[in-house]
Image (cartoon, rainbow, N blue to C red; front, side, top):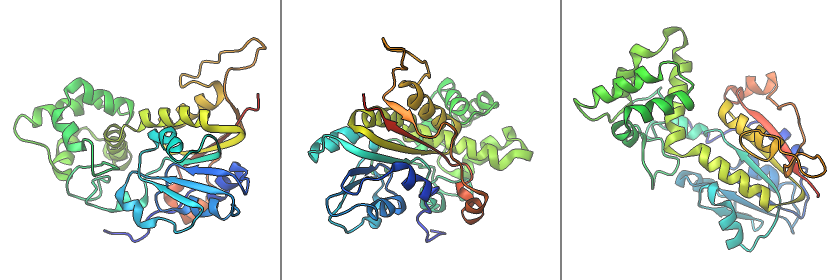
Length: 304
């Protein structure tokens, strides 16, 4: 492992301020990770408040906070509602999600999240279950691979990359990062090499972990669980996630179609707190370069 820092939370102060924390409230951090955001939330709670932290990654368990006001949930946030019911929680006062990948994942060569290292192509957030990037590259057909690279990676060469992968695996199984890079390099623009490789690895990671589907499920459940006046803060790191969150906050659906009720009000459970997305300051980006693509959106549950 190349880095001992598990993760540096982005826009920490903005997230905490945006949640407008009630000291005795019930809060959920659905992306516990290194526990940075969770610690800050706990600091705002009194003895009656409680925080639930979700994380499906076994490595995150080393960061569990030993505090009677904190409960760690070993699960993907797509099961948010199930676990809240399990803990007899009917409503929550606020929810935070940081959808970025922890430094720990990028810097651990054994996890296969980064093109900077060699090794196995895994990319599972929960490496105890599910399919890996190796399974996808060797089993998905050409059309499905192309769709993933185009939709999730926004790569113009998606079809060519998919065709090259399918052709290569007729000779032998694609198992590691070095082998994968060798296949795709002819289709990567040398002037934008790091950017396009990052987009490609992002696309695979999203598919491996069903990230977009999980996000939709979590947001839908959060809207049901939040009390009127409760707040939700979501940090996104690429345009697909941000668009989905923006649409849901503004219109109550993921397509962004504004449907109005009898009184002419847009049929959404949320009132956006920041109409303009919140981005890191130059000073934060200098301290934490990996925060540069972070975008924060905050919304409040309507009291109606």
